[in-house]
Structures are given as C-alpha cells and as structure tokens.
Image (cartoon, rainbow, N blue to C red; front, side, top):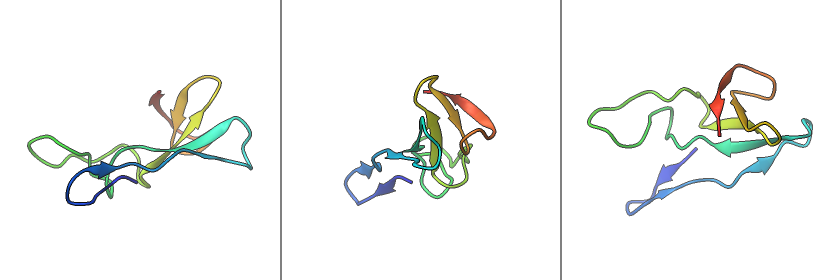
Amino acid sequence: MAYWDGERIHYFESQPLNNYPGWELIDCGCCAGIKWGGEYPQECNCNSGMLAHHLKSGVLALYPGGPFVGRK
C-alpha cells in the first residue's frame, strides 16, 4: 500500500508469491483504500492496497485466481 512521506508518494516493490507460481504481489497505488489525487476521495477497487499480478497473462486479481480487476 502506497504512503505519503510529506514530499512524495512511495510505492512498495513487487513480491513473488511463493505458494502461487507465476504470480506476484504488487502495490495497487492506493492508500488505505483511497485513490491518490482528484478533487474528492475515491475508493480503490482493492481492499488491502496490494493486488495479485499473473506474470504470463498480465491479469490483475484481488488474490491469485480470485476476482479479476483488470490487466497491467
């Protein structure tokens, strides 16, 4: 989950999911479920601040094999 340090937004590096070959965990870019920017707060489509990314297909999901939320 991204965070603000007072000067810029920091994003976490992707992490391999060892129990799920071919998947990695990536930062979705929101902060505590709220998207950055815009004129008013908007909820993010992921709850944890992280998304599962399938390396071969580029599919994004809430968790490996779970509800799909787009492509990278």
